[in-house]
Length: 234
Image (cartoon, rainbow, N blue to C red; front, side, top):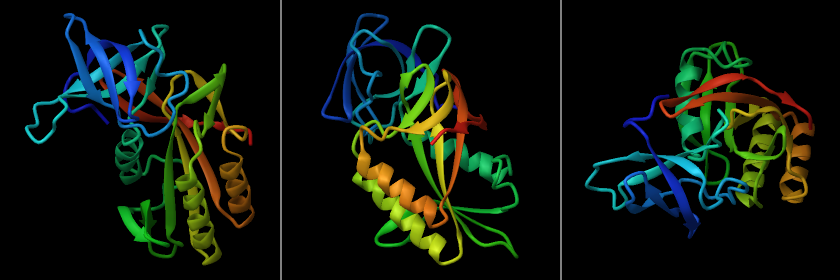
């Protein structure tokens, strides 16, 4: 998935109100950008950090920049836009490039299911059980090389796990797919201390047949692509 317009570098001044952040561009201008991330962004919102913003000239948008990446200035990046994983995965699923789901040829995004929920992707193919795939963006890293989810309490995430478990009860495939939007992690685990409720929901869902897939990503200021399967150490 390539960004629609070339990204521009900036420095973070502050993040506030969850979806807003102020930045200083290289030319000295201070601007406010949209932050498409409802989590805590632990370790990713330190004033002074180098970031990459996506400008836009859409007259319908009040804010003319969107925060896309954190540049760790050591060759590694973190993607902070939680809409990016679905955009990157949709192309990969359609091309049969997602290990564990390659046999499915029909990919339908945002399909209603459960109790007023929408599954990120519903996959189907004649002769196979439907596969319901829920996607989560992973950006937390508190130990070198280890990505964790979630970075804050997520009752919505726990609800999604229960919905997936019900799908598995009905004989369909139910898949929880974690996409690590960091280039510096090689393993994945749950942040049980941050949200014990989510961890309990995950454990219960696994017992009922919910599968886990985890992949890393290749990230540059040009775009984000699906990477390789990552070890799950849960």
